[in-house]
Image (cartoon, rainbow, N blue to C red; front, top):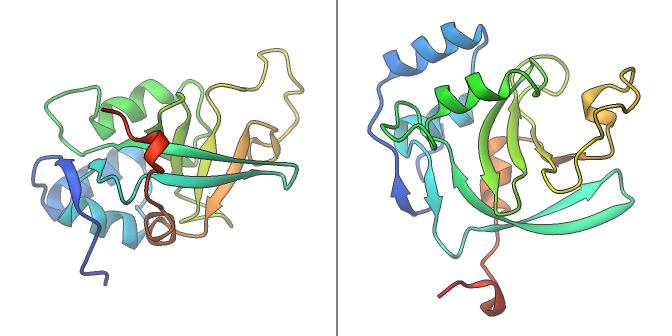
Length: 171
């Protein structure tokens, strides 16, 4: 099991294995081991400046960089950052097999896949160039133009975060 995670500027409250089990019962799925370990040891928050930027490849056509704003926390007293609250609100528009684990500075959502052949993968749903309401409903969520695979696992996602460029640092 992973023992070290990057430093966070802000962290969620300490959670127990029982809290994770309760959340898994609520979402009716088991969290990937690396993400559950992250919740136990760090529980979300804002990553430090040296772990903020990640690359998005939209169907190998468009490549963008974006800045991770925050990672959701289990049992956070501020519901803007609470994993359960954000999951409940996102259920109306997110695919059932994912859980929203964070978001970027542009309103996009970072998700972890809970079930199926993509289980454990991290994906990004673009908030700036999202899919139109009247788009083809037969397209699977992972084939949409506003969705991109980011990493094969949560650990890989975190390890792939890069420092903010000097011009990206807010004063």
